[in-house]
Length: 165
Image (cartoon, rainbow, N blue to C red; front, side):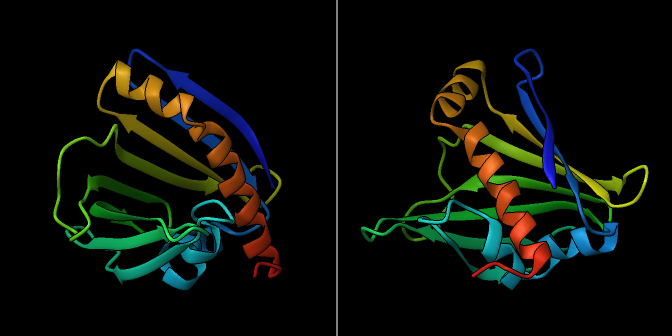
């Protein structure tokens, strides 16, 4: 598995990370569909995800948090806009406060995930992140979202190989 491209488009306020996966399209979909697998790869190793609610269908919601080693916690809620297993998923990111209530201020507003077949076998997964503004995109890029996505894909490789913690 390897990241094959990272495309940043300031005009459309998007960044798309595309990677080859050593898996079938159906197996790659399970990385999103199974909350226990999702927990193994989403977020950096020292800030792992814990899924609280997982309803991966259009109109559903995914809630999870990531907790750091010093006790810090970041709660997230994604509204599922579209889910077309095993190839297409659209999520709207909802920034939430400590009580799980939506609030304003999240620069990353949506993700579109596509999974297709790779020539020669395997799958190609693309995650397109949408930003709320040019300033929001610049801020998130400066915080290291590109490197974070590369880490995510390296952790996907471990999940697919069955070697994740």
